[in-house]
Length: 209
Image (cartoon, rainbow, N blue to C red; front, side, top):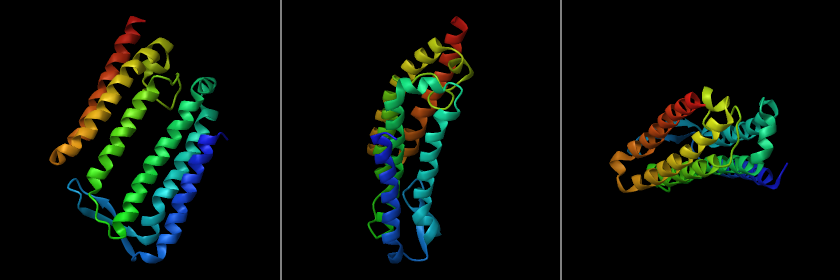
C-alpha cells in the first residue's frame, strides 16, 4: 500500500476516534440532515449519526482498492496510479470534512452547513477536472460512456474537454457562496450540463472515428 493510501486509512481511523470520544457528549438523537436553507430536517440515532460516515468511508476505501483488481482494463491503472491514489484521498477528505461539520454542529457550533459545504464541493469538482487530464481508459473512473470505453482516442478527447468543463463547474460552484438563495443551481446545474455535453461529445467523436 502506497503512502497516500496509508494516509487515507489514518484519516478514516481518526474519524472513528473522534466519534468514540464524542459519543458520550451527544443526546440519543443528533442532527444528520439539513435542507436547502441550512435548517435541520433530519435526525438519526446517536450511534448511526456518529458512525455512519466513517463506515461509509471504509466501504468506499475498500471498494476503490478492489476496482483495479476486477477491471478488465486493469493494466491501464498503472499509467495513472498516483492520480488514482490521490483521488481516493480527496474523496476521503471530503467525507471527513462533512463528518467534522456534523460533529461541530451537534456540539453547538451552529455553522451554516450549506455555505460550509459549497467550497468543498467546488474544490472536489476542480480536482476531478484536473484528474481527467491524466486518467486512462477504464470501466469505473472517469467519463464512462459506451463510446469512451471502447476507444482510446475518444476517451482522451472527451476527458480533455471534461477537464475544462469540470474545472469551470467547480469555479462556478464556489461562486455560489455569494448567491445563497440559488446554491442548489450553482452546485447541480454546471456539473449536469457538463456531463451532458461530454456524453454528446463522446458520441460525436466516436462517429468520426
